Length: 282
Image (cartoon, rainbow, N blue to C red; front, side, top):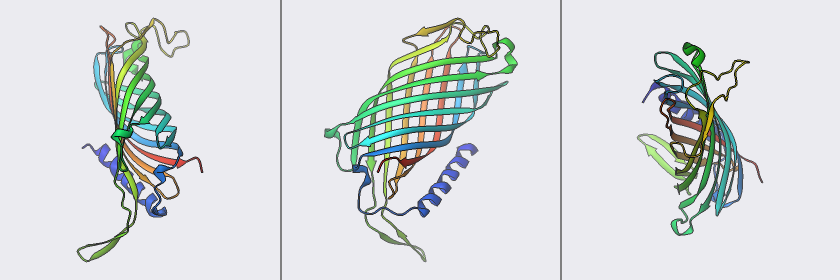
């Protein structure tokens, strides 16, 4: 594991420990059976790999900072979410590339009663994602700027397993005694498979486009209704607090491949996010 991810994990666990130690512990009431609306604020980092033939036939690898904000609604039989995420950072190969990724994601899932019980919940539904990828590499002169608009409609399935500790337990390690208090937490896995992947991209390269005042950014752009392939997954651990708020640690993997003879673009992102869940109702 790289130093970046090691530091990210350490920071996340320190923050989690501090926040949970200052929060009141849960009683026997399961807050997950209630109707809940959350405002979500996420902070994290992304390790990205890019294969970009539109601006240069190179592989880039590097790290991006990640910030997201959204709102989610969870009720016993369904859940929905909309969030906005921005990633920004530097990638390197022979030259340095500055990249920004902006995403809007919406999803709606329904509970499958026959595949769910008190501790295990399975949901299915749809998800839509619209992304804008902006790339800048001054070393390539006129071909230094790239802007791509990508959108995907997914079929999505999610499973969640709750493993609560309902009673207080007294433990001992060597000569140290400690108490494990009641806690409500769960682990979830979500898989999104593409139904329709579309793109709005330059037909050959970005020589005639760019941020210059006299140039049209969208010169010679083409819309492709069926273009490429995309896959997204998420593994998340969530700890629920007595006051209705929550803390979540999530790992997201997203891969997007857009074909082309000269303008092929591939992007893979491994993202770790620490997410604060603020209860907005009740």
